[in-house]
Length: 271
Image 1 (cartoon, rainbow, N blue to C red):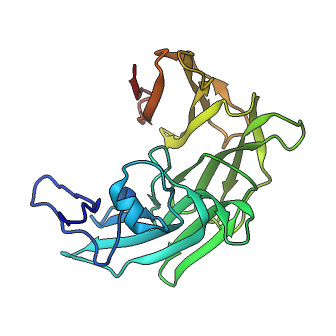
Image 2: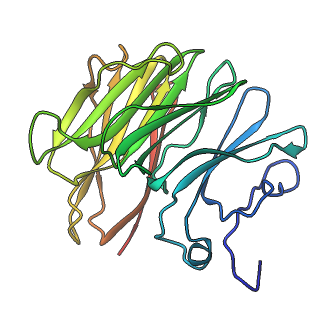
């Protein structure tokens, strides 16, 4: 909308023409998608409470609700609200939707819910609609991996449950498509506000866990940390760290592991 300068969403495909946006009056903050084995596109995005302000600002103004729509056979499904809260930690570094072999869509985000209660919110969409479970307490980053028909893993950051003034990277798994979850285990402990951009992936029969670690101080160097596990996170094998540039601001971070054991990471920084 040129007069109001509203931020929207652009969906390109190759081959083929661009797709129209899902129907409705949406801002589409941080849209993330996944394509299932039947070629359907599953789109998840955040919506802020103040649409007018959000339409004029590229950053800030965190989403307060999470939405979903599916593109199938040339048309979008009606958008569905997944979760609503006072604030959702949904942004560039958030884990997008995952689709398992049974066609179920899995989403995770950390949030301050409407009850002013912090939680790691996991949601699953099956044929009957959305089911939601709150997994952990306060968290900043949360990432999800789905593989096979029923296997899931979530990694998230939060206060260490045993040591005060310490941040922890926590890990849970599910073997029944998210109906029940394991007791959280602590992968690592670190200084507060030093673990960022957590990513968990399943490739080549292993779990791959990545995060960015370091200080937020201007000019401070940061590390890409990487662990692998062949037994669902019971044991983690450290991989070599990669040093990121000592820039004023680390902006965006993405990483991917392939079944052959290779890993590619992209870190965007400024200054």
